[in-house]
Amino acid sequence: MRERIHDKFASCFGEGGVCYAAAGRINLIGEHTDYNGGYVFPGAIDKGIVAELKPNGTDKVRLFSIDYDAESIFGLEEKDKPAEPWACYVFGVCREIIKRGGKVAGFDAVFAGDVPLGAGLSSSAALESCFAFALNDMFNAGGIDKFELARIGQSTEHNYCGVKCGIMDQFASCFGSKGQLIRLNCKTLEYQYFPFNPEGYRLVLLDTCVKHTLADSAYNKRRESCERAAAVIRENHPEVEFLSDCKRVWLDEVRGRISEEDFIRAEYVIGEVQRVLDVCDALERGDYETVGEMMYQTHFGLSRLYEVSCPELDFLARLARKMDVTGSRVMGGGFGGCTINLVKDELYDAFVKTASEKYLAEFGHALKVYDVVISDGARKL
Ligand code: GLA
Image (cartoon, rainbow, N blue to C red; front, top):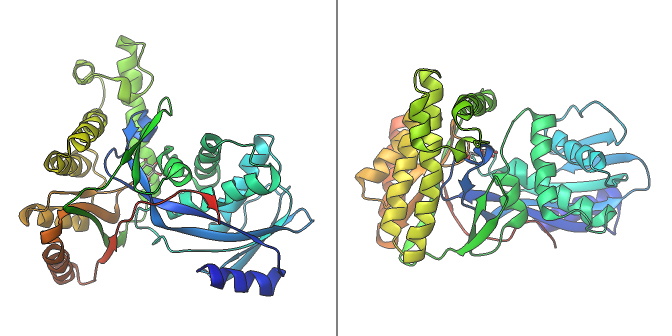
């Protein structure tokens, strides 16, 4: 990939570019908890975005996306977003750096990625983190810390892409470290690395290859439900800043004062925050059976209470259970994308084969299989 990027860069913009990379992510557990101030447990993966950049001495940004085989040019002073949706991420990152008092001057860039799009692996966070890291290095002498780089990516989603996401994806993409998952407290941003080397097991992603339209607006609606529930609970318990601060009994107190829909959304979130802690404890004991059981519980919650699953994802999680796979659940925002599966080595081949065959027979199109390698986050190459 790097060679292709370099060849294109050299032919469009000449020599002298510098290369940067940032990764997509998986999340072992802790879904839809980040914007509720709860815990998440992601890691960066060996699939990401690579970009070659060079200042061009103007006030314009010239971008070339190899994957879209398309160019986008925008001015740094312009108020309007570029017409190409993929360029909005880079535009947003530039604006957010400038908004924070950082410097961005005109530059040329060519980039490409191998994070499957729409699979719930955060290709957009990888793109944001790659450019945030690169522009920080190139124009700000690395003076913006990694937390702020992650926030720059998150604000880009909020302000330029219409998704009111949490901090998990950009955090994982910036802080990822080879062979380690990161438990992040999204309220305090305290984090801890956990070596992840589940001997005797493998992590595999099964991509349904479906992405439901309106996923972004449904995502924002889930967030609003949580905020409404937290606001009512706060009337009784002023210390509640986020839903993650709520005890389960506090939620029961307001049943009847919030809609049934908001209630079940909140019920899921409160359970999920605890599951992340339980999974971390289990991991430290080497107890992968408990890790897997929690993953199934998360799937149940995301499917029945949070309602962000879909028939394809439910089919795969159900099949995993039937085949005695240790753990399986929908990963990421939902409404399509992947299941993440914790599978015993000896079951791996049979599971992947059976899932592929049965999925094709049921839905008439193939799934994709990705093996997971936990890797480093944003960096200069
Ligand atoms: C998307 C968002 C994240 C997070 C997950 C669900 O990936 O970008 O912030 O909310 O969904 O856990």
